[in-house]
Image (tube, rainbow, N blue to C red; front, side):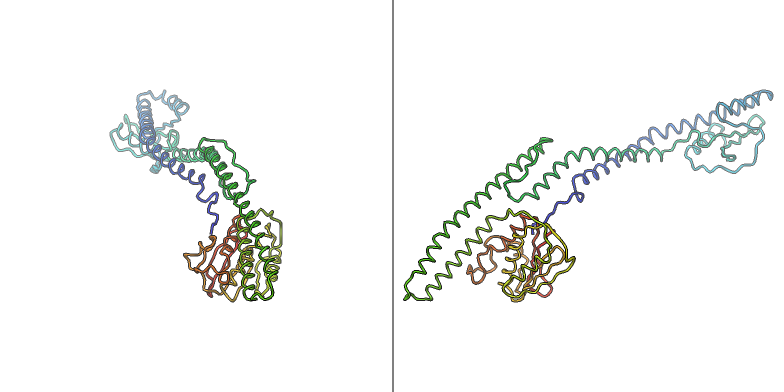
Length: 427
């Protein structure tokens, strides 16, 4: 039946907006990283590698041109100011693992400047260049990470910081929208046509103000309509019961020679009319009953045991389960369901399973296409309107209205053995 379909968090505006912004920001970050890498990082890295190679070659050329007495001072200056180690006593070193893109660029630039293949070496946590120049074989060492550029770290920072900024921004913006929408959804779900409903605050963006204003107007109109309907039907009920009482009195005053069967038929018709009026009045009034805490199992059991015929009752779950319930409304719901089940099946059972009450019968069942319509006023599966075969047609409509008024849910299922299983969920 009319089940609650809105849930915050699952498919909510906040979640969907965050997901959309996250995907878009991820794509923007990828494009930004690609652009930075092509137009900024790679040119800077290549220029830096070119400068590094130029410094290494220039250092070797200067060392060769200097007199032997000045070379130690030059080596000291390179070590202090440029973090370069120059030695004329080369060692056997292993080839460097060029796992950094920057080192590959340095090796490439050195090969171009020296016009010969160059292989970088590694040792003592330094990268070494082995070069022969001016009859001298030199080794020049420099730090492997001195000028290295890490595009991966740049990408991680852009993605991480971008995601955090997008999430916080969307959280602030969307919450400003979702907060009044969540409030509106809660009020719409709790609105049951009562006059004392709490109106939505008409504040915020223009669209939300319009939504709140229209909802408040609609709620007031519906409350007034239901109130007028109740007043009208209550007045009609009172006015009709007065002539009914007079007709009963007239029947009592009839002479004794009147046919008893005719009198009995009139009395039965009057009882039917009185029952119709009572059902119509209960349907119009709905309920304004205040819930109170009750232990559900003994309450349902008392309602079932109070029935004239014996009805099997079983219970599952916590025997001390307490719920906030409108006991009068729930009693009316169970009474109508049991009465309806007895009209359509010989075997009627009531089962309490936690917060669900099952009323089953062994009748022919209800086709799937009619499981919603049977809760409409005056709808009947058969075309007869006789009280003998089905009453006023308001029993299940009253059940639905009471359930909606108190936040319960009612649905119809097919039990395994056939028949009908009407389930009332109280939570």
